[in-house]
Image 1 (cartoon, rainbow, N blue to C red):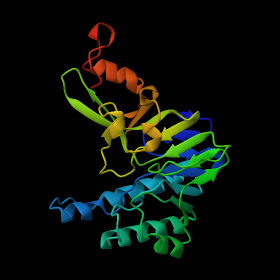
Image 2 (image 1 turned 60 degrees about the horizontal axis):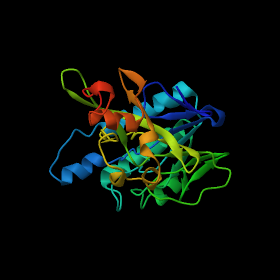
Image 3 (image 1 turned 135 degrees about the vertical axis):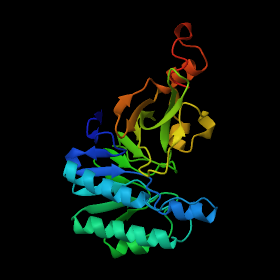
Length: 261
């Protein structure tokens, strides 16, 4: 599905492909999250990294992309990398190198102490943003002055998802892209690539609780969620404002209040 002129989704995966630039774009891998949870007494099988690596390899092969852009939060810990992070980040970079992929990482708020390992593998670390003609690729946790020729902004950080109810009242949450406008530019928010991140229900939270300043300063009600779910596909929800009104029972004759919470 085309999201903007130079950007398309890749099946029902939380990834964006820029054919003109031969670049696959993903965000928020949070490698090492299981280790962090384990320190808090929550123990999960440590298999999310393997699933992510395999999916990245599949997407690169499917699209023929020669470049990979990671929009921040490659790892999870804010401080020095945990042993799990060191091992798995190295493995990912070695895998990408063996595939001949040129890898770029835009620093996220979790990406401290990574420059040494990235430079060892020839990976480009961008402190604030990566520019591809008129497209700005950034993490999204910091608002910054953008180049005058910027027309599209791609961010992560928010981990967007959309919540819904079926006719029986069962609640579902789907990872989603968010597409809207920010300061007159197209803003696309990518869902978290990590399989452990279910995401934040954008249609449930208040504007002031949004993480990214780009979204807090935008009209979030005008954004359209594009849900992506393995085994189901990619599907478009109504704009956030419509979903909020339906949730409050303000839809036409109250119709649909059991569809979008």
